[in-house]
Figure 1 (cartoon, one colour):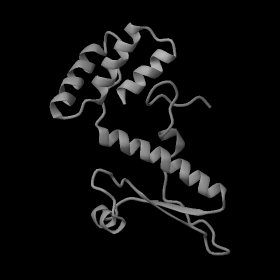
Figure 2 (cartoon, helix red, strand yellow; figure 1 turned 180 degrees about the vertical axis):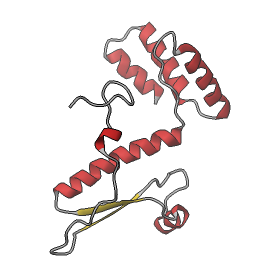
Figure 3 (spheres, one colour; figure 1 turned 120 degrees about the vertical axis):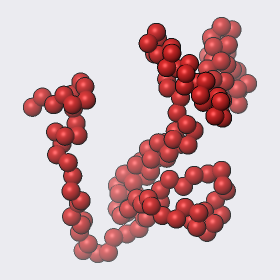
Figure 4 (cartoon, one colour; figure 1 turned 45 degrees about the horizontal axis):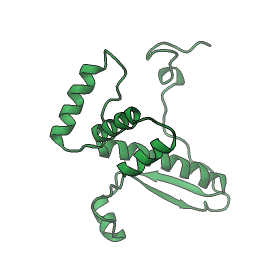
Length: 147
């Protein structure tokens, strides 16, 4: 993958110094393992006050966040086409993995039931929610939004 990224960078007019910086960044963020993660964490925290540095995130956490973004897009697209959806978590991932023959290297963060709602069905009452002013802030966490 890295030779292709380097080739794309060169094709975009990046000089050797920029390509080398890219190589170091990809190597830094793509390295896995407990020792590598610990080193990245220490390095990022030490350098952060000096210049902005993305904080390393475990690969599984990153994958779950990406899956949730994809799921949200799916939910919106399905709803726009008249389908009813219900995202679910708390299912038996091991049994689902076995039933669907999902290889172990893949995570199953959620399941989305999708279909057509029965004719005349209405949306059920939503679960209790916190007031918007307790959830959304302006400029900084805890700073109330201007009315």
